[in-house]
Image 1 (cartoon, rainbow, N blue to C red):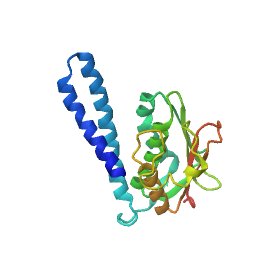
Image 2 (cartoon, rainbow, N blue to C red):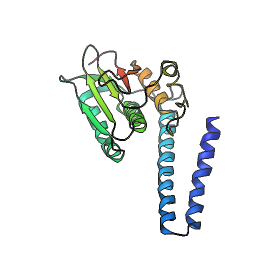
Image 3 (cartoon, helix red, strand yellow):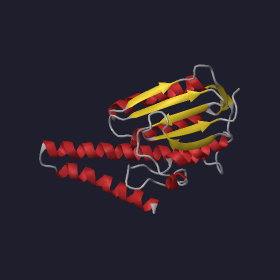
Image 4 (cartoon, rainbow, N blue to C red):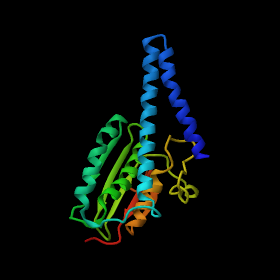
Length: 215
């Protein structure tokens, strides 16, 4: 079913090129080009997620290389890469580091896949002028939490959202792979990923990744 949906999207997106050729006015051409740009962004995102999913599939992935990681510095660098996307979507994007140093053992490349997907999801589903905040806590265990202002995910959906290709009904154009990738990476790092209602401002959701121990 998901394969058919993606194939239909590809066919629809390729039609934009033909529409550009048939457009009669600059306004028509500009509107179609805008749709084409959005289509290219969607396909680029899907390809990136498919590659990340293949890379992190526990049944096929290369062995994980564990190294000491300064969690404050690592997550700050990841967040910095998403600032432009947040600005483009008119979202208040914040980062709050731990007051004390916190180190974990992990594979930087794989953990970047995890947090890129969680932040991408938060920005994708948070409406314009909403808020997304990434927080790090050192105690009792190292924890990274991404809070958003998206629609609250209901309890009966929470059990499904980490499954491959599961998409929330009626919202977004996600591939349904982002949270599955995050789950795979967390499991490989003996970390626990969970979702709960955002308890900071009472709006939206919060995804937390708790690592078993610090270095």
